[in-house]
Image (cartoon, rainbow, N blue to C red):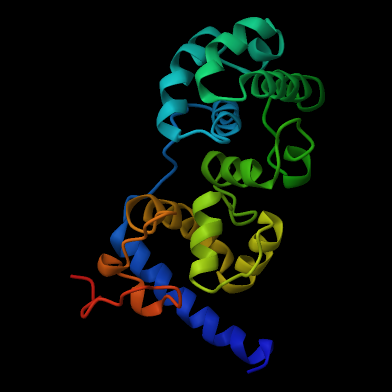
Length: 225
């Protein structure tokens, strides 16, 4: 079957998968704790190679000491490093957080920009972080957030063959309607954590198994209650 003929079938399968994911995880949302766009930006930078749970343990003290972009831009590097140390790669993360906030202050009047090209101009901010901020801070579906869970599940589901997040995002944007781009990402993340983990996916209890070409065991009944 040609790639053009495969696309409608993939779209239909993706639509059914998204419907099931919405039923399975009706309240799925960003699990990072934040009150402002800049706090979400900082938390997302910290979440690289770190769990959201750990980030949420770190950010209360960080944001109490440095509540906004101006405070972070003027912060002492060593103090920021101490506060974010447990998230890993803390020197680089602290450097990027301070540099990003300095650019936000000097170039954007202290407010996190709402345009993709402006967000990814900030130090330490690539499309993944920008997509999270735009979707959850501003309600803008600018792209598909591709983290490790979205990458793994999208490959297993047969919606991409790529490892590069930008190429994966491009493939998914062709399949998923724009209003559901973040719905897709956030629910795949939930499903990746709960069922389809990296080393030992629980295919025997997966509600997507009958639609997944990588499923090891298809349950007899996958219908949702």
